[in-house]
Image (tube, rainbow, N blue to C red; front, side):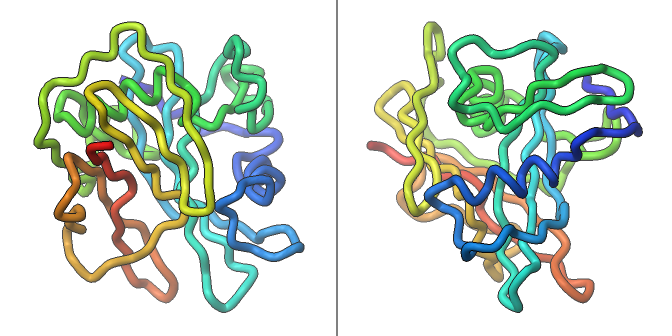
Length: 218
């Protein structure tokens, strides 16, 4: 299981995201830079123990109507070949040294573990505590086992988020702008093959919840 180091990061994750988010087609802010706070999220473990995998909720507090963004991120000790376009930035980790930070939807390790989570073969882990499952994360899957042999992710961003074709004719939709719902736990759309959902802290002590990813037949 991944070890969470309590150390310094230069620049911080939020500083990297402040520059990167406005470049995305699903970004809802104006011309000014967002004012971000880390609101929550969860992690997944890389079976090989090489790649850090995090699903971070970053909330833009620059407007009265706060906007929560989902940033799937991977952290690597060396560049990911062929993924220059997906690089969010680099940072210096106080324990691990230089880390290359990627938009995880382009990283095959994150995509494989996310699909394993949806299928029930992987466990969501706490974002900031080592070796601790996150039991608030819920998931479902109603399809056949997914065969990822030779699979290379080719995600596409649009105004509504990120879509990624996966084996067996399914499409994974990563909801980059999170829409809170009243249900606890959040329920997937009726036509969904699978989903992932969880919650995060909102303003004034509230708890917000949403579906983070939806898997549908194409």
